[in-house]
Image (cartoon, rainbow, N blue to C red):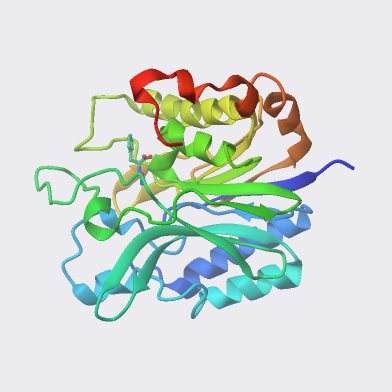
Amino acid sequence: MTRIVRVAAAQLGPIARLENREQVVTRLIALLRQAAADGCDLVVYPEMALTTFFPHWEVTDPVELESYYEKAMPEGAVTRLFEEAARLKIGFSLGYAELAGTADTPRHFNSSVLVGKDGRVIGKYRKIHLPGYAEIHPEHPFQNLEKMYFEVGDLGFPVFDAFGGTLGMCICNDRRWPETYRLLALQGAELITLGYNTPLHNPGQDTGQSPEQRRFHNHLCMQAGAYQNSSWVVGVAKAGIEEGCEMMAGTCIVAPTGEIVAETKTLGDELAVADCDLDACIPGKRGEFDLALNRRPEHYGLLVEAS
Ligand code: ING
């Protein structure tokens, strides 16, 4: 019996700074209903899919800053998304800014949850590779202050038994690091969901790459990760001009062969859908990339790491 998961990569256009949760959730539910009509099992939303990407500027008002974080998942208007998903019997992954810890010691993470067809949270991931910097660069047209607004994730790279297979999550900059995919693949990951908010121009870490090179690198890192770990990769953008910052699209679904099998065409709210046969991972996992048989960390010399 094949293990096919019909996946919708649910790209979002810009989320304005003043767009409230009700308005955003209405957009997410519209995509959810479209995916359900297409017979999808799983919808993958972008990184920070509930708010504007506020690390792009210094937020001086503490009340505004606090408003961007979810104190529970779900809470408030977001509950409506969970209820509709359960009604439609469709699962989803959702990126959001998480407030954790206690009132005395609050903690802030760039997180994502995986939710089953029953509307219950299966698992959570907290972004480990935070790009950008922790201090303001006034000379930049916009910032990337993720190191100021978030802690490094403390949950590792967990995998979850769900949708008939083994799934993992990562977030945005994580996709540029081969360790991300390998650590998930070493635990058997067959489908990796990730969302991203990626400017076409990234000051501070800008190495003068052209927009074309940034778009190329976006697909390169996901296709390589999928191929080298024989896993499906679903990469979903928040795209368009968000509060003056031009964000790339490039939303795509990548097969375990590294080939892109579906991608979006616009910069707005749009689905890219594909049937992801989890058994398509097997030839690679039992052949070229049989990690137990062919990978040799004990012979890598001084660079050998724990994993
Ligand atoms: N954004 C970007 C990303 O990794 C970036 C930061 C942009 C890094 C361009 C390098 C080049 O896609 C987030 N949110 O991680």
